[in-house]
Image 1 (cartoon, rainbow, N blue to C red):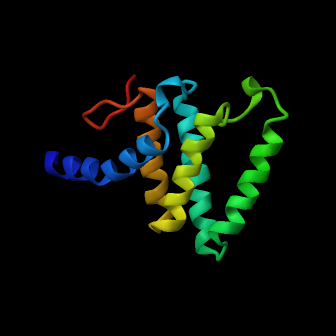
Image 2: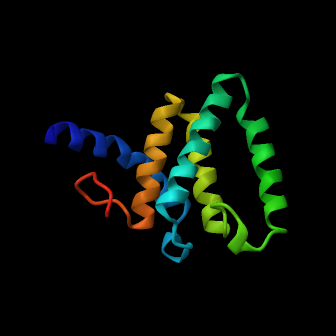
Length: 131
């Protein structure tokens, strides 16, 4: 059990490192909630499902960028997830993972959720949520 958990955490490490390299200002980003992490994981899963249905990375990222541009007209406090540039880059990095390192949609969602919860300070080192 402990070995399986350790292996799972080690498999997530490259994604966490990639996100940290892409988003070095994570400390200044708005604090994500468990709900936002869950919804973000759903978004990433849906991106992987879109990929599996034939949507290209270029097409998906074009829609994503257009959505971000539209979101900027809405006050940050009313936005879902992407309230600042750090959030946008965090989500963008995860989307690139979906298309450049294909995995099962559920796995992408799981990895995103774990990294998001770490970023939000909601994940214990033992692989459990803070309560």
